[in-house]
Image 1 (cartoon, chains in turn yellow, green):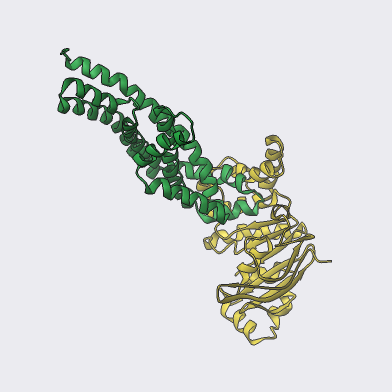
Image 2: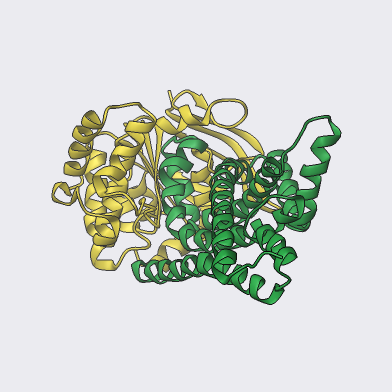
Length: 242
Length: 216
């Protein structure tokens, strides 16, 4: 039984078809790495899963909730967390307050309960000592870890990561990847759009190569990296130097 | 003919200026409240709500305040409801102020990066919750200087209410002129009073603007 089920999803921006019939099944505990050239529709697909983008045809179901149509997006988004390339922390709130906001407002926790939860989540990403800092006082890597803690605080059943290391200085990438790797060990279901090929190969349980709005190839990462069956994937892997 | 000393003229103008201040304050506060409510509709992403608020704003921005005062003063009376000059002035200034403040604030809301909406959306916050906890606290900082700056327009706008018979500083000036026949003196004093009310506001707006840019 799939946790996230994507069936023949199609979407276009005006005349440009971005997703041309995507189908992916994701089981609980899967770590799915979506790779591909920019413009191949990776981020759009990810954003369709939590309803940030609408799609025109096909169906997406996440944790038993159909995405799109009449169903409540609020209920969906409680179960599907998201981390962004640009962190998108709330600059007027401290790290702890960033984490506490949704549990307090959406899940109606008391401030004290939310504070305990925030401390737990910040400890998980190794930032217990930064709880009182504002985002502007944190490095990019620290901000992204707070963003992960913020998403985890809603106890999502699946976490979407949209190129979460792409905006980071090279020396800050690893601290974020280590946190993500830790999550995979806790059996968190993750869908990552990423350019970190080595990470995708080593940590992913499933690799999806998107090309021109379609799933061009998918399978176990190590196998695909070792023996890509299509020339496009072979070329893509070659160009990234992985 | 009674002798009007400078002091008599000035003290009468100052007494009337109290009503300029009261009307400005009341119109600004109520206009601000209506403007805030309209702001939610204006940025709601619900097409027909946005359209209706846009029409409202266009109407009050695109017609002279004086016409709006006439419409409220004479228009409501057509329905058999007695409207005092104070009531008409308050209503017209409230609607007029709200239209401008909504537009000013919409700009401030749109200055908040898209990512803030997306992040709070992804955390399952509703539109009202997003506005309340994420967007408005950030837009508020940007909004203070232009909002204070606009309050100057409200103070000056109250001058027009003299025409429907509301006795504030301009109306008092007209009455004093009729009694003294010294228009230059009287209206100079009226202008000075407006300046004394408005200058501190625009000065303060400028300071706030500077402070905001430094804070960034």
